Image (cartoon, rainbow, N blue to C red; front, top):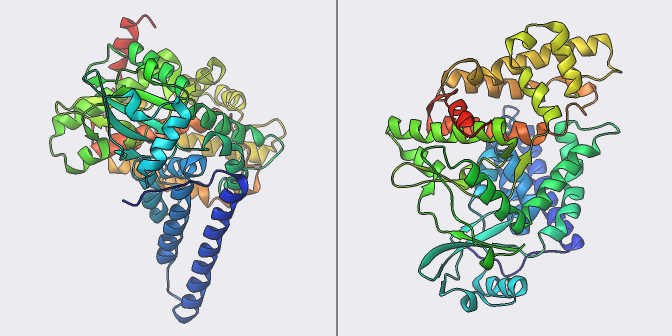
Length: 440
C-alpha cells in the first residue's frame, strides 16, 4: 500500500484538499447529467460510486476527524447509498499509513526518543492504519507489543475539520435551530477525547477490570511507562478482525459464542458501568484462535448520565410504551418533543417514534434473539430510508433529541451490525447474571 510522507495539518492546507475533492465531485455530476440527457433511464449508481471513491481518496490522505466522520457514517448502513458505505468502511482499518521516516520523526517528536531507543525491536512499517493513528509491532523485555502512534496535527485540526464538515452534516441530517450547536459540540468533545491516549489507557484498564468476569472476552494490558498522550503501548493481541472471521466462518457455535460475549460486554457496560465503548466497528474487535472476543481501542467511551439512561430504557417497558401519557412524558424528557410543537406535529412524532422503537427494541423483548434475522434488519434499513425521505419530518425543526442520542444510538446500531455479520444467536438476558455478580 502507498505510504504518506506528509499530512496537511494547517487549516488552509486541509481546506484546499477538500476543495480539490469538491471539484472532482462536481465533475462527476456534470458527467452524470450529460449521460442522463442521452439515456434518461440512467441510475445514480455509477455517480455514487465515483463520488464515494473521490471523497474517500481525499479524506484518507487528510486522516484525523474528517476521516473519522466517514467511518462513523459507514457504520449506519441506512444513512447513505451502499457505494458510500462500502468505500467509507475502509476507513475502519485500512488507510494509507505514514512512511517509515515520518514514523520515526513523529515518534521522536512525541516521546523524545526514536522507537528503537525505547523498544528492543520495532517494526518500521505499520500493521494497521486508521483515522486517528496507526499501529506498529514492537518487543520489549520479551513482551510482544502493539504501539499506536497518533498522526501529526490530528488534535489541532479537529475544530477546523468540523467547521468544514458542518455544512454537509447540517444538510444531510436536517440539523437546524438555535440549539443545534450542542450536537457538534458533543462530536468535537468525543474526538478530542480520542486524541488523548492517556485517557484511552485509563478507560481501557478500567473497563477491562470491570468486565473481567464476562466469559470468552479478552483485553490487552496497557503499559503507562511506554505511553503518553500521543503514543499508546499495549499487548500485541493475536487474532483476526471480526469482519474477516465472519466472512468465512461456517461454525454456528463459534458465531454464537462470539456474539454472546459481545452482547454481554455491551449490556454490562450500558446497564452496569453507565459508560460504553462507543466505537463498535470491525476494526476494534479481534477473534483469537479459540474464538474468544478481543476488545481493543477505548478512545471513544460514552458516559451515559442517569437523566438520559432512565427515560431511554423506560420507553422499552410495556408499562410506558402502552401508556400514552407516560410515553409522551418520556419523549419530552429525551427532548424528542418540544413545548412549542403544534398538536399535529406532536402526534406525528409520537407515532413515528413508536414505530422506530417497535423495530429497534425487538432484541430486548425476548430472552433470545437471532441476529441473522433478515426481516429485522430489512425493517431497520427500510425505516432509515423512509425517515431520510420524509418530507414532513424535514419541514420540522431537525433539532430533535438529547445530544446523548448521537453516541448511544451509534453504539447500539453498530452492535446490531456486528452481530448481524456474525449471524449470532444470543441469550439477551444472560448479562444480568454478571451485573448481579458485580454488585450492580
